Image 1 (cartoon, each protein chain N blue to C red):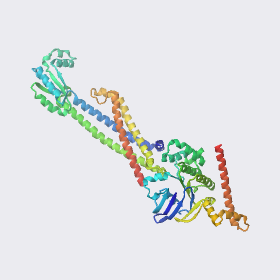
Image 2: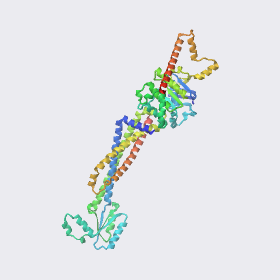
Image 3: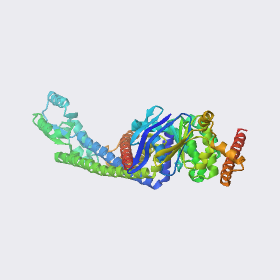
Length: 305
Length: 283
């Protein structure tokens, strides 16, 4: 029996192709924006996480530190819930790092010995908001000479600045994207209402006949709701597939450009999984839109009768 | 099967039906006649629960449908086959799809569709036109589509609202033959019509409405014969046959009788033709 409803829904679309196209295009644009916003939110979250969890803090140790003192400090940090990935760098290792960094100028490395490099403990934080208090605590330790952030992030202010800036961008993407997507969703909802309302008006005679031959309200509504569902699914698919193809095309360039920052999954399966989740969420939104839109339109037109 | 008990219906200041009492038995063929605006269609619309009466009861199969909850109305309508004067066929669907929709409404399994559709198409003589759209069919054919759709659900009660209203005399008679054939299968048929010739040609019960009131009622042939047997009365046709034989009758009467006979002959010819066609199909 559902076949007859599907047939009716498709023939209704076929009879008014421009109305159908208008509905599908508007929904496609809406879901295109929703997909883009979702990907941007994911990428910015990943970028923040990346910066937050990098080995950020380096505690340079005094030269006279004993093995026991060093172990005690290390153990203390490892047991701290705010701290993760604790790593000890000896004087020799520090020299190696220096040599590697100055490999293009061997003269610089020849002039130094391990003794001039302090041993250090590097660690990252689970959340950057703990940075200040953890650094202060570590500084108070007598075996610690001084504390700083990784040089690549241009010191303490540089890291906080980067993370804060990223947080702000993420907030803008979330709020701005959300508002824009919400606005488009509202527009799609209204377009669906108008188109389904028009459909109901053109099918008024058919509805009257069906009612006279004993069709239940569910039977009469089914093809109309199905039609709205077809629009939504087509819209979701249109918007989603456009972004997915674009991301697949751009991924190699994006990965090269952002380097270590994992703004998108590098594993194709992971990428497909991410887009699968977005698609599933959009389908839920689309079904909700089409069901509420079509049912409201049907009840409005029925009341007018 | 169907009872009207003191049913009245008004539309504003216009009285469509006034204190109607009716009792229609199972398997009866009843004509509802009367001039336009006499309340024929209103009566049928009340049976279909398209309208609710202002007062009175309408009892179908023991249930007062005026008190029936709205959500049960579709189930009531699913048990009634309705043939409309304006056909009420779905323009965007083929003849076959128009019939299918009635089966889908009833929730009948698709496996059964083909057999049922074949049967009604054969009965109504529309087999060859099954893939055509309503715009490709004549008025008579459209009315037969409407009848086929009503029949396919195998209803016990068939309502026909002026089914011959848009048809010429010959097509109307053909359709009437179909109704008679269906009636023979035991269906109860209520036909609203103002086609006098059609009613006069048949010996079914006739309820005459005028300005919303039952102003006359004739019993069907069998009842009438029983009554005559008791009272010794002669029926209209018998009297008219006698008139033909009598040379004393006026010219006017002779013409009337001749017309009636001519119509009867035409009907007989049609039945023969139909039988021949059926025989051909069977072969």
